[in-house]
Length: 427
Image 1 (tube, helix red, strand yellow):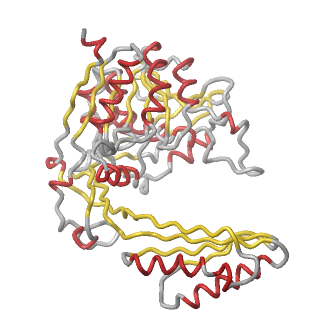
Image 2 (tube, helix red, strand yellow; image 1 turned 180 degrees about the vertical axis):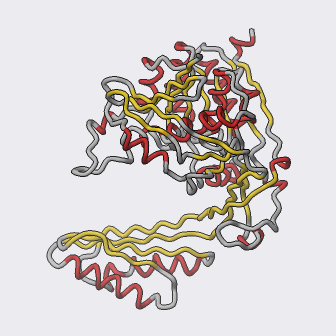
Image 3 (cartoon, one colour; image 1 turned 180 degrees about the horizontal axis):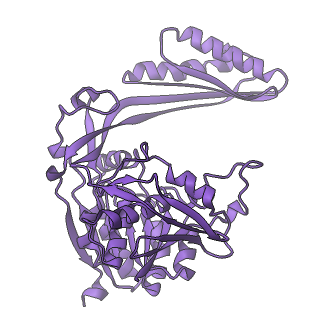
């Protein structure tokens, strides 16, 4: 029976880098996956790309890869990541240049085709409202969730960079490649999807999101280690973390992650399969070692999920602090003054803090910039028109990119792969 080891190097865009470095140094991995896109991340990346066509990739990519690529190349570990976000080709070129600058050589593959804005049916309903997408306002992005089949042709490279790909699919593809699985085999694809779903959030599996002092204690959280899985060709996955790292990998942490975001345990829809986890077996086989098996699968959906970003107006956040005796009552009075003067304006006012120190926060969202500016002005006017002792006013206005979801026929999505050679590798 063949076995391969795959590690999780990031579970979101702001994740730590050190646990991934540790996995590359002493994890004996075949592949390291960095999952860095949330629901809003691609839309925000599209916003950056609209402002500057050279941008749009995950902004931490250069810092991450400058540290990870040398370790990965020395260890012979393939990296798969969705840090391409809204501009995978730019991310690929930066990665190639980093490899070249470090004298590492190597082949970079860029997977594109998730951007479906040009073929999006604006009369399709948004899941959140049931109304046509066109009623959302100006749509700035539409990215389909690609599956493992889109990644398979790219896996001849040393680094694979994608845009929007379903989180488990980032793991399913390298597992299928290493173990010789046919993605048309429901048992194999279900097993890979289960492993990928458990690993996709990195430190969430090893106790990071699980920790609750006094109820669910997790040791040495400051040195949290990220997980890996030894996956056999029979589909059984043995989850672990490196010795000496912080965190906790247990039946409880695995069960919590198993149910994360799946909605229906009998039918978790992914681009690769409809996953059924009701009969999954989870067993602790040693300290920080858990064996999982028993996933089942039904045919993959004929339509792919699309994450749609649209201009939802702007948001104002205005704050002022009160400290000293009676601070909480002064903060409450300040909130009353602002909401009275902004009667009819949909604002949210909340007083955060305690009796001797608090901060009033007033927020509103809308398309009327003058009205948003008025919210900020009213909070600032509290300096001399509100309760005594107010200070530290902060007013911040930012554009809001709203997110909606819809479906698109699978045949309308056309993935593609571009290979970029670092000069040393091409010589």
